[in-house]
Length: 387
Image (cartoon, rainbow, N blue to C red):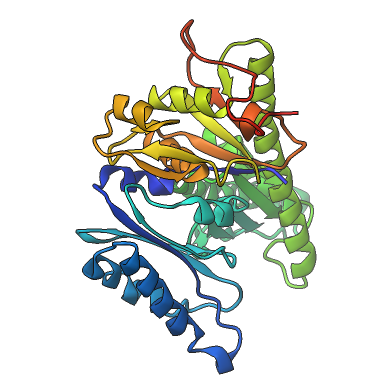
């Protein structure tokens, strides 16, 4: 299954100076009898990193964060990155990742990218006529729920003479609308701050309609209404969860199909796309890339060369030197490509074989293109061609 990954959470690392220690570790604790397993694995990671040349003080700067309790059950992972200044980043992962530990000129982010690629920042809004419960689910981190109550409490119609009933009904509906407007105002702030991909609305139909009426364009474009769930008693949590997951799956699929579709369209027109390891490295050097496509299982063991500076990447030592690297180092291709995407503010989409067929299993959708942009459809490395 394809998976798109926004790399913004790693942009701060691109401002740091390497070399870096990177550790992706499984911190799942499901059995009290094996509670010391994490400590044992951490000691093994420390030995391996020091043997690879990592300074002991840099490795030790990760220990507290590596062994800290998660505070949550279920499968968990953690990415840790440090340099000579100490711990730079600690990212909680919502799945059990492939463990990885490296010391080198760039952080090793691929295991964390794989662990996070299926996540989708979103908001779930459970509405009634008095307000809403707003659950913000970030791509990384734990969900946070707040309640919005506007204080307009004439929300129920009552029996009365016809004229009085009409006036009272008008006041009631005005209260509904004001309450929904207060929720819309709060959601506008949430969208600006958290930039969710989708806002799932559930609950009272009148309240949802009023909310959409008062929503900003940015909020309205993200709203998906459900016919289940809400704040009322007796709401089925199972039905609510299944409906929400269906919306999220559809949103992910649409985003990923858009990336692959743009790549195929631009490749077919020989315009704003590149494919093949060497052409994609070249457009990354030039910061032309909007999205990198990596076909899973195709390029992970093939090396590229990188330096300690941003976008100092090459298919050979000489190319990396020409890109500015003073002492190029070989690293796995996927690690180099993901790091170059981070440094150039591009995204990454991991693609299953059969979903797209770029040469070498590597493609790129470009921000811009000119006559010098490489676009070869031919494999640049023996045995790595597209189908």
